[in-house]
Amino acid sequence: MDLIDLKEKCVEKGFELNENQLKQFDKYANLLIEWNKKINLTAITEYNEIVEKHFFDSVIPLLDEKLCGKLCDVGSGAGFPSIPMKIVDPSLEVVILEPINKRCVFLNEVISQLNLDNITVYNVRSEDFVKENREIFDIVIARAVANLSILAELCIPLVKMDSYFIAMKGEKGIQESVDATNATNILGCKLIKANEFMLNEFKRVNLVYKKIKKTPLKYPRNYSRIKKQPL
Image (cartoon, rainbow, N blue to C red):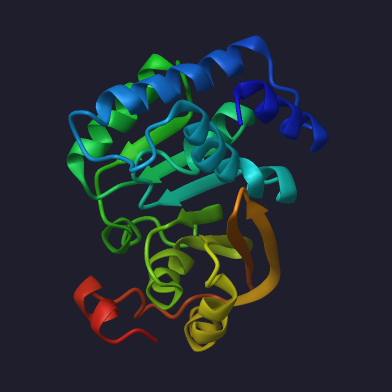
């Protein structure tokens, strides 16, 4: 997939990419390739694969759900999915949580080089960030971060009432949603949609949850306990 293919996919869903947005994607891909030689950001380093497996995959929830408002990307890594989403829809207000400092340096360089505004990177774990920022986001999203039983406790406490948590998963996504039912129920979310699709030969599942009750204040727990004893 090249950038023209990406543009056509976005147009099909009602998002028209202009020349500047295509240049932003191009610069982003080249920055990723360049920086990946110095720090481990991605195993995908071929330009067109970056466009398809990172950029297109990242924007699918935006194209499908027409997301808007204040979005938090938990464990963003090299900026996925939030930076591609921000390029496609500049109106999004984005907060990125990334615990690894060298990745934060990369993310801030991308934001600067692409001249993106209303997007902030925090070098912090979500379970620490939530202490001062509980239930404030319209969308909390995570891609390829952790098993859903663990991820739910890291993300759902950040979600406002009647707002959304989206877990971007691979082929085991449906089973993960079943296994995490107890966790998502305790934390206050209900699965409203499971969007399954093929990305080239790979199956992807985007799980969309709605916050239907407040998360009990004792969550999230310390990360070591979350990992050792998932809900």
